[in-house]
Image (tube, rainbow, N blue to C red; front, side, top):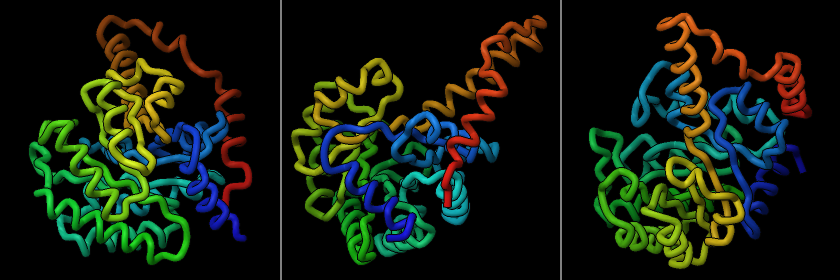
Length: 279
């Protein structure tokens, strides 16, 4: 088995039992640090990547750019990587299937596709079209002939397009259409997340960001969540440091925010460790 094939097998196995955390790096350095600190797998963040290009979140990165970025994360460490590919960069089911094929071609071990459009307000796709997009993506994933964890996202609760009941209706249909993993970002509360988990038989991803950042891994696991991602939260936390430190420096000449930093030698060691055996 090749090292890349082993990554795909390992990624699939991670979703079969228990609960694991999948951090979301936005560049090679953050990927290597996360790997060095014990991550078992990584997932890209569309928002975090957009920030590195000086662009806002949601619909401001092309498919080619996202694929090229994902390749750099795959090459950065020996860990399996899943791609955050927004709405698949297209409305058309056949186009979403092509995104899956391209994701697999560059070596991703999985990817996620959302059911909301990358336009102002992020409206949800009509139910039947949303399901057909998932069906096309799942069929493309199955045709690969190797493990590929396809995650179908119901983003309408987070975006205000529909409620939890509609999200459950959608993920149940997504499961029937062949998705390997279901994901409803930012439901109202942990009880709603448990209700989401209980509505399907396949694994569910939970988002530890915003109001859900106060919960522990054990609490997510108790709700039945199989995988915990953080989306753009770590990237946004990094940007908060930039904003706070720069505001203090330029506003009142206060450099004290720079006292709380990781020593250079520690960062260097983590970067080297995270890159070990990367292929």
